[in-house]
Amino acid sequence: MAIHIMGGVYREICAWPERFHLLGSAGRAALCITNLSRDEDVVLHSIIAKRDEVELTELFAFSKCKLDLSFQEETTEFFYDHPLATPKIYPDDFLPGELPVYSDHNADGEDVVLFGMIDCVPSVRAKTLIYDPQNARIPQLLSQMQCSGEQVIYVLNAGELSHFYKSHSGVAEKALQDQARWLLDHERVECVVVKCGAQGAYVCVAKEGSGWVPAYESHPIDPIGSGDSFVAAFSYFKLIKGLSYLDAAKYASISTAFYVQNGVLTGAEYLDDFAKTLKEHKPTDKKKKVYLAGPFFSVSQMWLINEAKSNLEAFGFDVFSPYHELGIGPAEIVAPKDAEAIDNADIVYAIFDGHDPGTLFEIGYAIKAKKPVMVFSEQSTEKQLKMYAGTGCIIENDFATSIYKLTWL
Image 1 (tube, rainbow, N blue to C red):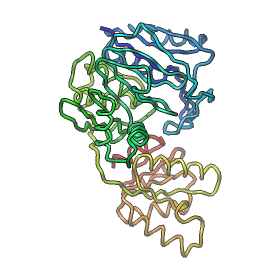
Image 2 (image 1 turned 180 degrees about the vertical axis):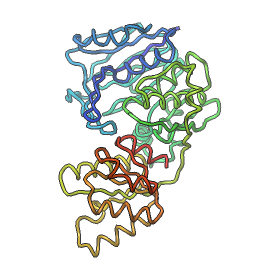
Image 3 (image 1 turned 90 degrees about the vertical axis):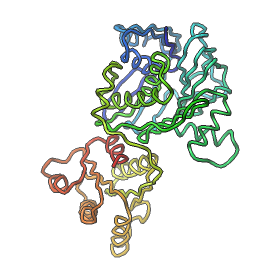
Image 4 (image 1 turned 120 degrees about the vertical axis):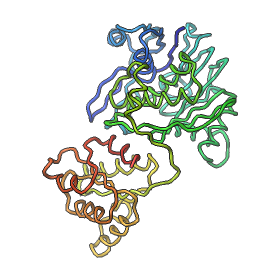
């Protein structure tokens, strides 16, 4: 039995920490499945530039993955400032209404894992179809495309689900579980799996039990491709191992923890032992308040404050940022309000490099107030961090990892 993977193979470039990959959603999913089991036949259907064929072929040289490629002038590139950043996409002149249709009839009638594509609209008639919309610009429902399956499963993230619900239901946003049930009914599919990042995943099933599967805490965390690894593992455990939807999603979550920590997947037989080393993180409805401490007196400092604020909010935190809430004002006004905000916060996230006196005071005040403190520091020495480590602060030198770990406090 072969699993057919159809979707984008893209160049992924991360500025910091520096990363270069020729993978994309479909390429990564194919690689992950071949890592889970060297015995499975995988066929990767995608479009790349002809000059990248050799590099991609070498990537799969020692696996049972067959490449079924079409060619275009350029391979699409995704450029990230950091792993949590919204990527810039090149070329950037794709118009949704003018995208070409990409179909490969070799995948028709087979078990297909389909990813939405940025540079074309895929078309397939599958036996079992597992679909991740995965379009960073305008995700599309299967009912809007020339795609179908005898059995259809959606695996998508919470943002994509919210986009579909708002644009198609015509009503105000509801709870995630209700949105998942809406998509299940609207698209008449067997199952909807909603990836919720550090909160785990929600599995909504038409005929058997629905429910949450936990996320698993890992360290360090490189989140680029985490969703792709989840889809790949879910597809493997559902299509090859025949597990229930909930069990397949649970193993997908464990696999994702391994992937973001190591950058590759391991054999499926090792995942149970790996899971024993992990701590489960179950979803919560509580919206925690975070006080964002850090300097904002230069372009680079302001850029990092803005990045931290937007990513903390994207992770579901209620963020108090002194600059955004109060601005630069007189000490007798700003200082008491900052102290009050720390008192009202659940957690303090402090950008430490630069050793700004105001930030150091805020950390000390938070420690005295017995608030958990996450110190993000890339360049400070152990000596400079000594007092903070000794008073219970959590110190992290990787930006993406620091945000995830904050979620798990």
